[in-house]
Length: 237
Image 1 (cartoon, rainbow, N blue to C red):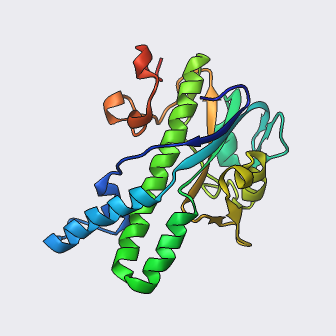
Image 2: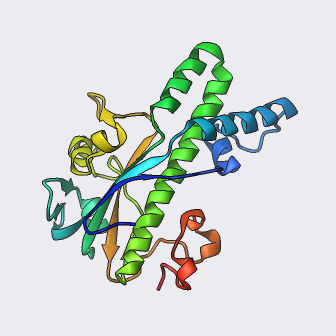
């Protein structure tokens, strides 16, 4: 749970991913799957779940100001630039930044498979993509619980590179949440993250419920990680 403005590294235990998401990342559109391939997918997903080490680091900052093209935060030098992110956070009182990753063991396995089994590499890559999104969901669930604890609500997560929020902020973003020391995430010259199965995102903390979120716990992508329902409440108030 968030404490004050910063939380230390979180480690998540994730025992499954949505098989349909794995198939979607594989480009599956309802084609018939052979029994051999069907079983192989399950085996590769199980391998990915065993190898991955889902972790995240999260930090919250008060909003200093929001202009039509920039969000300025208290307590850090990061500037969130662009009309889309400014509109997304226009009523936010705080902004939460997080990074989630599966770790370098996943990258090493992808490299090994590229030399030994091209098909298995593609399936493993798809499973890892689905899994890192589940790690991001777990971090997002922590943020929603934090918001609920202060009587607030969250927006959906918004990542650098989405809309007109530039990918070039990734360096400042990672430094702001200490992601290199906490998680081992670094950047290539083109601002791509290593480990490759990593996600960064921005979530707004708002005084009122935000549109675009799930209307029911039964369809919520964060339900597996939710700690709010145990209190007899929901994140919708």
